[in-house]
Length: 251
Image: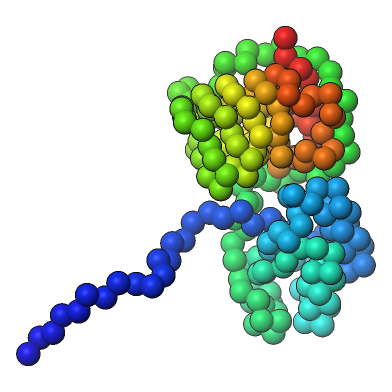
């Protein structure tokens, strides 16, 4: 005799890209790493306080031992962020993850980073950019951009793969606009804009009203708290020059 049942899941599991920061450990100096993270949290609490972080030990010559890794996790928690996983790596890192009881995850935002990127958080004074057509797509993108015509609300994300992103509305607080090419926002930019997501250093960000929480090009980023205040509310262009973000008010 066969039986049937109407089973409705209590939780729906979906796998996808999520907003987790990747902390690449270059030197296993726990005190310095904690101090640097504490400074980031103090500078930009809206971005970093209680932020989920993946620890990436791939740049180290050898995998740290469990005691050192557990101490790092504790110190980073005390600094204000929440280490939630280790980045996938060698068999030693897999063993370390089991020892300190953390999962292994891929680096969700690795595509935002270029291999030579240096995360310099010092503000850069605005100046006039080199001549460029604001409407022209970058060489690494398709000729037709992705057009999005409705506002991006908090928690929403849109990604233009291999092309520019054109948002004919606002990007609200807590929303993310991401593109492999340039990003054009014909409205207020209040959330996050990440252009050149796969490392295109020629990508740019354009918006009519600049109040961004974060802007990034090819992995180089600035957060709202360290962006020059005179740019706020203005039509702004952002580009990368000598591995540093540059800002200018557009006429």
